[in-house]
Length: 128
Image (cartoon, rainbow, N blue to C red; front, side, top):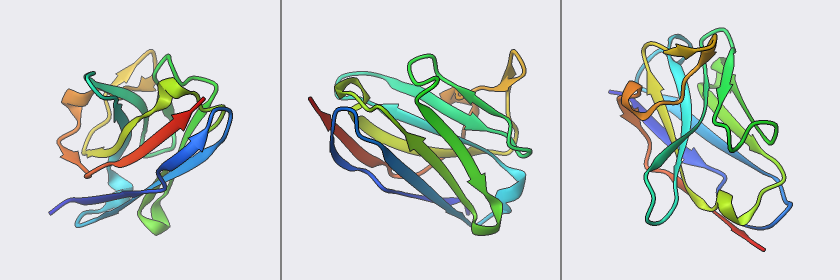
């Protein structure tokens, strides 16, 4: 059974940085496509980033240049490094896993429908 646990969320000021972590268990982490998503109050879930088995990454337009996804398969962990945070980044952040990555323009897509396994989320709140 796939189990994902996110951590690292919190309340920060605009301009700050934050690192989220997601520890996976119950499957061979190194063979899975991983993704980060977020959902702000009253809005739908938005794809933030995805990373393939060989480390290729893809990002949503709103976070390109500010967020970096990475993975450490020895630790069964995927990370999301977030910089220059702003109030619009306030959301619940979710980690997700899929057996296959889907691509657009040679980059993994963080599209909700492609990821069947989800964590419970970690809250990020950015104040101005």
